[in-house]
Length: 579
Ligand SMILES: [Zn+2]
Image 1 (tube, rainbow, N blue to C red):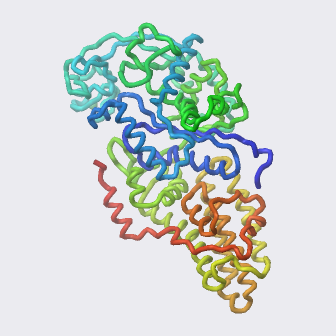
Image 2: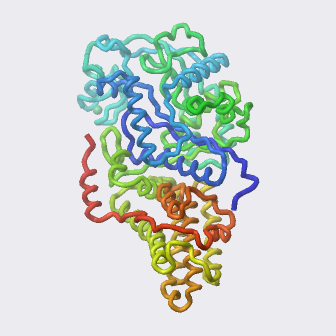
Image 3: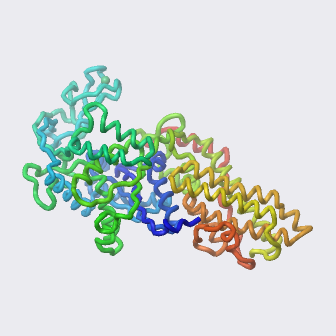
């Protein structure tokens, strides 16, 4: 049922922003962007006003190093990788209203603005630190870009923060024969450098009270936040600057920051601010005024009635429950705080972990090269790591696609349209009326839709996908019982009524499945000459939307089955490591 009181709802949705460094794997996709897209599509389909934002996270040393490896200036490298990630996002039909960049001029201005406000509020402290400087590289080196021999186990590629071999936590000065991971140079020295810290500890009580007020948040989210707030010495202050070239120059608003020349903000500080800057980029890209993006973000400028929902992997929860809210609250301005955080566990790959650094698993570009987006969308969303980690195996993927998409949904569409074409021609047949079977089906569909919508509203994705599959199955079960191929011989009017209902059911399925499988949905609607459809209010009314005489064409196979040969071939191809 369309909820009237809810009809004017405005929903701001952000997905955790992927790092610019390389193409993401399917675990990244299902850990944030894809569920966020499902939610955005669902609410748009329900007639709500949605602003769905995502961006690339472009600053920090990994971007610099990746650019150096590619032999390109870092700005050029980031621009190219943004275009690549953007194209892949389009391929998966991620329906961002804007896919921004954390290196945008808008984010520069906003990040400097927030830093200035925080400083004025007494929430920024200056700390003197000793850090390793590489004379050959002409730069300070972050801990993990110093390599050397582990004093504990003798491993010769230990990093300055930790030894990968024996897992011992290290300081760069612990390493034997330390060298720069950037150039290999051993001409290193320890220098003193000053950094700005965000005094998160001063915000602890406010953050604690705010988290306590979020009684509807998933336990996964609040327990992580509480742990960071209270474990050990409690919430720690955090450095927000770095001695790097690539990044947002440290300034107080538009003014210089004495002593902070040649420094940039630390990537964790500017990345979440990009959620806001992205809306400003959206406005610029679409010829809108500042007021039009601010009505999503400033509670004093129209955003008071906005519901803001964030999607992310569990590793990102501390930044979104504590650090970013500390930035917003500390500014003393009326910026929108998140209303609901949906966080995810991890998707594992065939007995291990997906890994970008090790090239293990299926990457987004590879996935699209072998199968259309809907196959992946359906499987990933119906196996989303919600309550616990979940695992991708090729057998499971093959079985999910073949059973749910090909056998249940695809088969129904194919049987109904082909039978109608053969017996009644390519238009919705007339004659006959709903009987007991049809009325029973409508009751079941009503109950199914009620549950499906509740689960989608509550962002219980796995269960919602089960409900949707159940609703698809009702069509096949109905068709078996109504058996129009049999009644056609004895009571053609009865068969016509069954097929008319079934054709309407295809349209109905197309509309309610569109958040999960937008391409197949569009194909089903196109078979009836439609390019969209209203979300069903009353089920019975929705099932008579296509009137007798409405023409259609039999669509091509909606979902091809994955053969055992294909599965085995992919299994082998993706068993190794991407180079
Ligand atoms: Zn070691």
